[in-house]
Length: 279
Figure 1 (tube, rainbow, N blue to C red):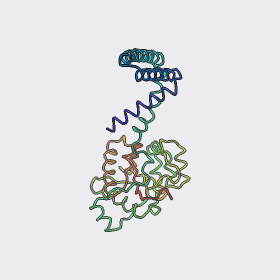
Figure 2 (cartoon, rainbow, N blue to C red):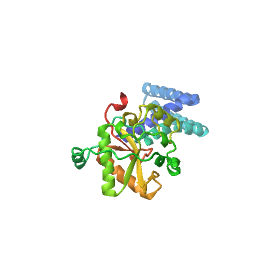
Figure 3 (tube, one colour):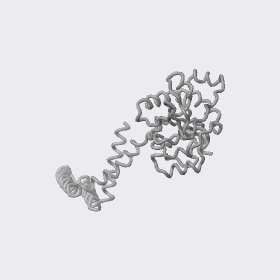
Figure 4 (cartoon, one colour):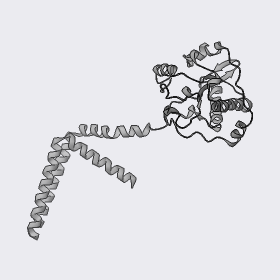
């Protein structure tokens, strides 16, 4: 029933658009309706024989109208096709692109936390790792992937305590279960830096100031350490496998993982709290 309703709406919309775009079409319809109305009136007023004759005449008139309509459509088929595209393409694009994007679901419910993870969070308070030397974040390999990383803030103390504990637990799981050492690339991000990153283009971020959980200390971008060097690019098979482990661990800890977004950000994790981005 729903599909029939959508189809009916589509047909009616196309017909109305045709009437609006083509005055000649309106004239054909008006003339046809007028002729049909006269024939019906004459049929009602006349006898049976007259009615039969009028019915034949009406049939002939209807055939003539349909033939004229077909000729008209043949002459204007390009315009009709253009109108059809204008009517159908925008809603189809909206439907296809309506998936989860970089900025979608600002205040959606947080991920359901794994019971085992919840038990670990209620235990010991995990400590932040020692900061890495600044040159670690400015190597040629790192700059190629993250060119503006030298100005990033990596201070764990500026992160929300609940988020920091969950992220530290993810780091612990990655080390103990999967053998990956991890490092934070950027945690808290000032509104000014957020706008600067947004100005760099959509390939960096779509979020402007206070449209990101970074401004509230509830998000972080992370990567892997291998032989003392940062490995960020997912083109590295070892790193891509690590991102899969990382995403599973982050979601088990109740975090939202950027690897599931339309604009995928494999190293990103955030703790979504209702109302935060509306403050």
